[in-house]
Length: 206
Image 1 (tube, one colour):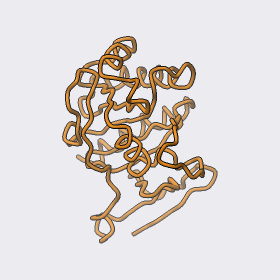
Image 2 (image 1 turned 180 degrees about the horizontal axis):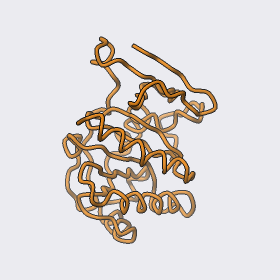
Image 3 (image 1 turned 135 degrees about the vertical axis):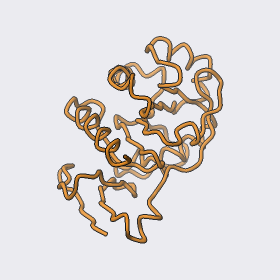
Image 4 (image 1 turned 60 degrees about the horizontal axis):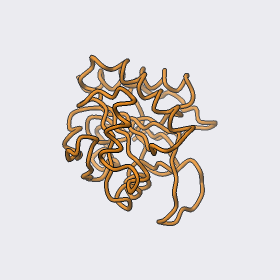
């Protein structure tokens, strides 16, 4: 196994493959495919949520696909609106690439019902089957955010189970449900890096 950390949020390149993110400190690590650790790389936990059309969305929805994911809420007037605009640009960029999907989780599911998400998705010109907006049980979403996506890992703050949060981060998940990149959605340079990383993942799985 080769493990390399990063400083100042810039990882040293040690191979032509992307690193894995396996803990809440979001330190990238490179893991040899022949190592025992490779078989136990952190994966997104099983989930079952409802999309903007009321359809059940699970891990199986993204089986064999890469997906870009974030956390938001429809009544957010600032950051979330900007991030949704960026996600729309990513949708446009990957529109013809069937191997890439988008997934946005609401963090206020009691407010963001299926019907609310439907209206919101329409306002963002979301393509059905390409960009999923999902809602569900609040505790399930928060658990998924914190322990699977490490969505609050950059803040170094202890959250209790009732804490409310959302993040400017986009997360890239590979075809096997493993985190391969974390990006600041407010930074154009990070979005360009995300696009390049998707290309790397596509080659990696040929």
